[in-house]
Length: 257
Length: 255
Image (cartoon, rainbow over all chains, first blue to last red; front, side, top):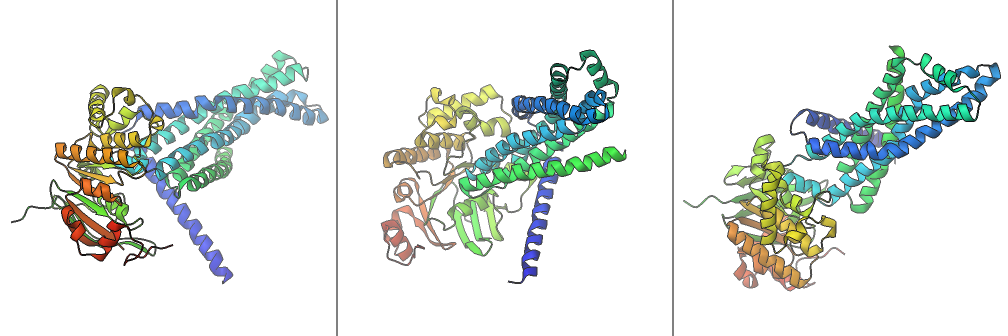
């Protein structure tokens, strides 16, 4: 077969997939603006996405903050800048590691669950049943997940920031023999509002991406159990990659500003 | 002048890629009639129902309900149109995240804005109608047997007392006794509601119990349509092969 034809076929399939995802995203956002809004389901999803992700996000942040303090101490001690440990830990966590690692952990946990649940609903005709019962599946299934993930991720990341700083503090005080008062002073003295805000904006974007990819792949799954498995894998992989891409874009936007 | 059919399909075509599933289906269901569509697996029976419900869009043809064209309906008109229908899915398609009574009352709460308590009372009555007690109402669908799931699916299908009810393989996966229980429930419920029904099945015992009329779908077309009582004397080789379950005949099985 002509190699150009193969490349062309892949490229066209890629463009078709992008177009299909863009249409789904546009449709889903539009449905966020038109009633009915199922507030009860939004609340339930916020609990599932936010509250039940707290342990995994908290533990990730705790150990990341702790490791960050150790690594930065090793680096900064080479040019006698150990006093910068607290500042770099807090800025690193709030601007970058809190939202990105939180997004990756939630993406793995929640994105997979969403794709599996909606995919199972698709292959067992539950989504068709919703339509015959005069309920728009986008309003009932997708909108609550999108809203809940977008609202909940910043709260999760705020908690992750605090826990991460605490992890760094514990290592700095008990392992590296920093003075507690001066470590806390250095933590907050050079921290700017924009450091925290940019991280929370990233978290909201990541939340939207996670829910969108979970819903998109679940909603369009086919082919029984194997299809649901494929949808789950695709949802996790695509949301993790998109989080990293979106992270760069949002960082550029804040950096330019 | 003859009465307008409740449901009328004319020259309906539907393909998936190169695979032609419906190749010009013509079918008429009169008001209050129980029509059973028989045919082998993969002949397009479910696709036909999904086209009527708007879950799939046919490429060509016309689908009329009460004389009004329904292909391409959207928004509020589509919601009003769907209010005429109840559907029992092959797998029952109960919502796993909701309790049994919430499944039955779903269209009342979400579609008709009925208060939850009032909807629960209706759901309990419909469950009683299909032989299930109030203790079942609080269970999750995962806790039900296959027969119970079908009954709950039937209760959900009749909860809003629709004008037209579709039954997709109502006895598939059930033992013969439970199959007959479901068939009789369908007959009783439909008689009480005065609804028009379209059932798709390849279970001839089910077809004989439920049907006023029978149509046979083969290779995307209706090859026979007549009274249920006449099916044994249809003179149609496709029907004869199907109802007697013979391997030899004009219907070639793809192995």
